[in-house]
Image (cartoon, rainbow, N blue to C red):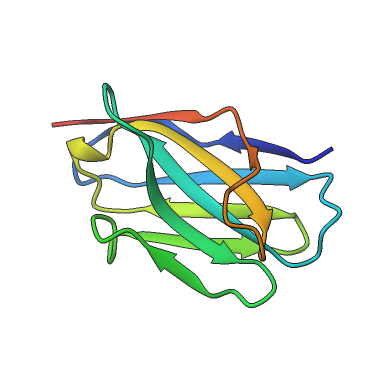
Length: 119
């Protein structure tokens, strides 16, 4: 079965950086997308960034464009989210998820990792 495990969250001051990792395993489909989402306290979950694994094409939410970078390591089956110039509004639980490229919804989710940015 498909499994995703996030790591790398923590407490950081505004202006600082963190790198999140999402280790994936158990996938049986070859064309897929891996995305990062976050859920701020008291708010709905929102899209952050995504990458098409085979191609490497990536796209971002407007709120993180220019500050966050998504990348993947084929050998490690891991997706990273490099977060720079962090702001207090970036605080939340960050989740990675994956789906087949042809599917509309993300079918598989990790357990999440907490990111807290202090002002």
